[in-house]
Amino acid sequence: MMSFWKMTINKMKHFPFLFILLIPVLSCREDDPAKLEVCGVKDPVRNLPWLKDLVEKTATGLEAKYSSITLVYLRDEPVFNYSSATMSCIGCVNYHCDGTRVDMKLYTEAERVAFKDNLFNKRGKRVVVWPGDLHFHLRFAHYLVKNQPWLLSPLTYLV
Image (cartoon, rainbow, N blue to C red):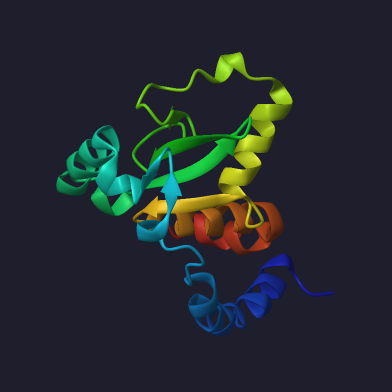
């Protein structure tokens, strides 16, 4: 009988090849944010003043590489989610079209779960409007934790 570590290492031999093979597939964008029409404007990152300010502040800061803004619908209303890897709560900073913060306490548990599913699951209904790098990494990490925990166990010892 093989030891746990031996089986893990045998499985990990194939991981780099599969990861390299999947990068082009996973990094393709289906939606072009510049063509997006929402909140009564086309290209909301440039044409919603509050969103444009948020993007400009984030783009010039240290967290630019680790942040994303994603459009998700909540009760059929467009909601912009601002996520940064430097924050302790991913999915908690949400804005209405007018730039006011969304109070998640006003929504049912089922609506909050549906919102998070759309935000994080690969089949979720969302559009990453700026820039998207963080979103890919978060989705990939979520996938690993949920579906491939054996991959992470040896990696935790390397950190």
